[in-house]
Image (cartoon, rainbow, N blue to C red; front, side):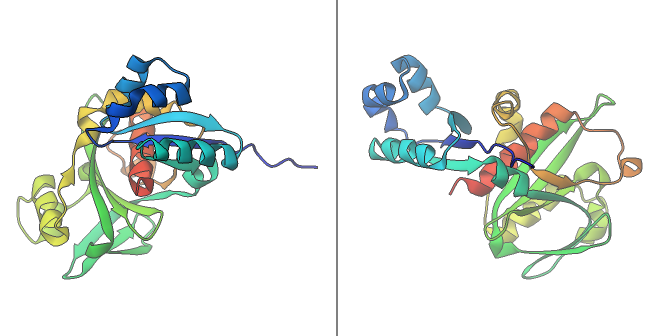
Length: 236
């Protein structure tokens, strides 16, 4: 008889309001950690896994207690992480209402501009010693995230502008969505690589065929980028 895999529920801390540390003592008691450790966690610029539970009810209980102390958290599970899908786009065209993309298997994917919650720039090293810029269009309505790898993408063709590159594309997206580009991954990449080790699994992805990649991605950084993108989709 097959046994269903164990599911872990993660209580994740997101960036807090500046005044949240005023209640650090009761938060410290709740988490059973020193006040200085808790204060440092409350200053997280991105995300922090506070606790892991085998039961959703226990995770919900901690989330509720933290909320009563003014600490904002959210809960994700291994199933939700695995169910999140990142699809690399081979081509894209941008119209008035959104972007029409196709993956490397020529399957279509439409992304309305007003359904984009975050434009995340993810700088990831490659095994040839270089770096590529991944751009994730984090959606409001779905757990499917389109991704563009700048090293594989024809920006001049998409923008009908000779010489156009990744920065011109990002400015185009900012104008269409009225959203600032999220560039925090590059600033906090080492911390996010460490954070990714707190999760037992990572999102699913439909990558470009290996033959089309300029060089394989650094897998630790790619895993961190994928989990950061997933957490951006779930933080609201």
